[in-house]
Length: 252
Picture 1 (cartoon, rainbow, N blue to C red):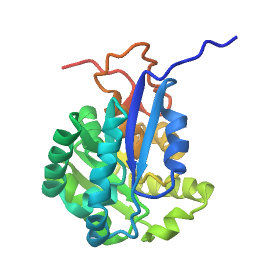
Picture 2 (picture 1 turned 90 degrees about the vertical axis):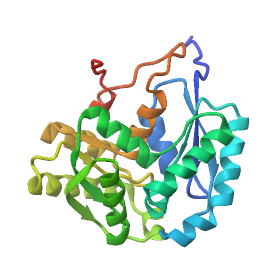
Picture 3 (picture 1 turned 120 degrees about the vertical axis):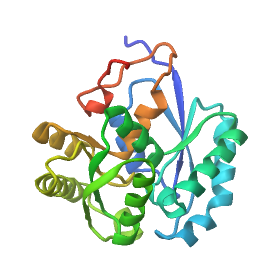
Picture 4 (picture 1 turned 135 degrees about the vertical axis):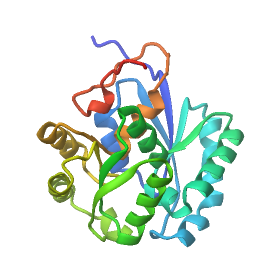
């Protein structure tokens, strides 16, 4: 008989969409046994600042719901949300939400930044499924955090197309973009493939093996950041076969 594993870490996640599918599926692949995802949802209509601002009251409400569920960590999914607001406004909002929740509140984009700094990667390649303007906003956000994008690719898709994308086609897109980026910028210290709805975790692992460089997705950066420094028991180690981000590193 298998011993049951009770949840030892409750991970609170605000999903930008009314449904949770690819976020949950990829979380279940990479998160260690006993890490449980607790979600609330927004209803983001499109990739725009106006659409993000429309959802801010629901975002505040969702953070309160997750805090009331006694989550151990709290993050907001959706790189477009953070990039649309910009780094100064997003960080001010995170300070507000963290104070209200009584715990640190992060975003996928801020967790990418933490992960990249942890890896010592300040010059990266960026591939997205989003329009050029949104990709540019991510480049600007990263630059403000000390990270330079040396090569970029974007698929120029709107939100509805990304919601309905075929997972295997997106896997192939991630491989194609990753290979094009590394051909253009072989000096890149990491590759960033953001997007909670993008089925890219398997492609990221293949690209890491092919190019010997860290490849980050939303779920890997955010799961890593949520567990970084956690001393709960019984802690199940992160599986470093998914990404070198999960491999233990000596402290400086």
